[in-house]
Image (cartoon, rainbow, N blue to C red; front, side):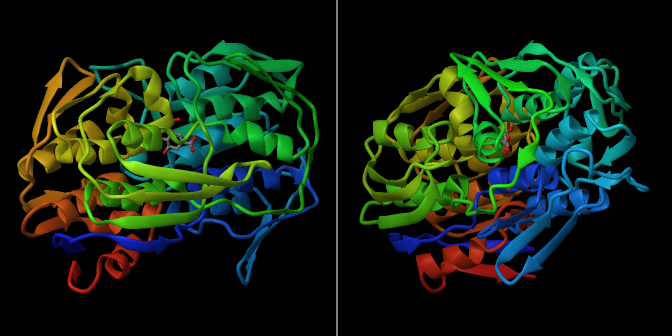
Length: 442
Ligand code: S3P
């Protein structure tokens, strides 16, 4: 499906976005291993979360949708059953990597497989620590350029108990941290992950919610093996800040806009985009409504003229999924914005550094790559053109924001991929932007 995006005069109103994808996937996996039933309401039914649900069903756990509520009949730490077929993760790396942690600690073998894009994403970052903990893992090998790398499908021969591990993350990744912590639940003794830069801490917060003590000391986080998971009963997943970010950034860049995103997650390990937009001069306010479990609240933004900024490598993990959007905001800012330490963008659903540079360059942006991991983006006028999503949801949505801010019409090819995280994105955008701004082509 292609979508045409026309320029928007301004964005005004209040939006509600779907519940957080990262948190929903974690909640499904933990609920499966907990005693009793867990109810998620609301929860994200985006494609990636459906994959997590299907995977857990294939491991013998009953999951049902009852109206708006997702009901998961947890089977306890010993309750997962050996799958008779490969566990299909679609394009969800979070599902595959976190499930690998759980499966490492099961007394059976299972295969995790994925679609074309997931099958090209690097897995050694999880297989290495999980192997050290005692799991045996086979995967597909890399080509001559990187023969040491492993790719899905992964065949995991789990072991119970695993060996406890203290591990310093070589790459800042919440998925890797989470895989190790989940495996740590099935280890003998304490498992510790040390991170040089903090990454999103949803797994830690949810583990605590499921009754597992999590010790945080500086940059180290520790769980003790053998602690049973107790269902918290009902969990309300906050709105996904990464989805709200598309609208908030568009509004920040368009003078005359005034937009509110209500009931969204305001976890400090995910919020750096808001800080950076403020640094760029955006008039943005946040209201924390609730601090229990996951902080949540609302964000208001008023559009204005932004100025360039520098994003440092330490800031990247807390805005990793918003980097494509920042590239768009940088095009609308006065001066040259520098984004440093962004090499991980190459390892997402597509090489996002390439897909965004290509898309924005077609719209007339002035972007140069300095070395492998640093971008320089000069503020410039964008003009509509045909751009490609490369099958990547965040590229498609970020380029749609660029289209709103460009002159003329932007055509986004392969726009259906937004279903991975935000199936209704273009409908919500059409309602918000007003008639005629968004057109769907067959
Ligand atoms: C995620 C962590 C990030 C992020 C991804 C979701 C998670 O990936 O980009 O969209 O749910 O833990 P990395 O852990 O690879 O940085």
